[in-house]
Image (cartoon, rainbow, N blue to C red; front, side, top):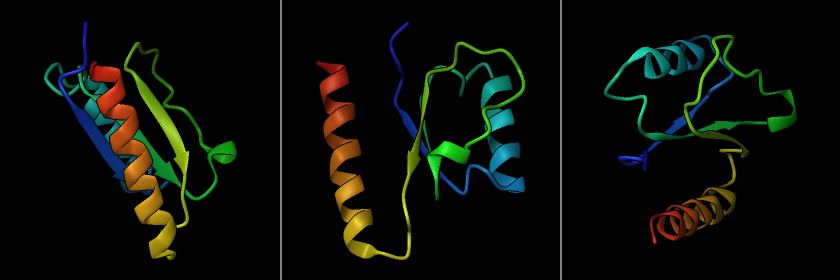
Length: 85
């Protein structure tokens, strides 16, 4: 099934971020969106415990650098547009 859209979540490794991801994965409506879960270091990203076919990517990004945030936004936009064509 194609993605309905994209959900971008920062702080995906944190307590609140993990709870939001669990909610996305358990929600029939939100499950069909592609997730981009932003963390400081994707090599430390802990995938959700539940089994899932929910499409998502973990992205490393230091949010204190505006230039890096802008570059990531361009990359995300390009990748999402490409996946829809």
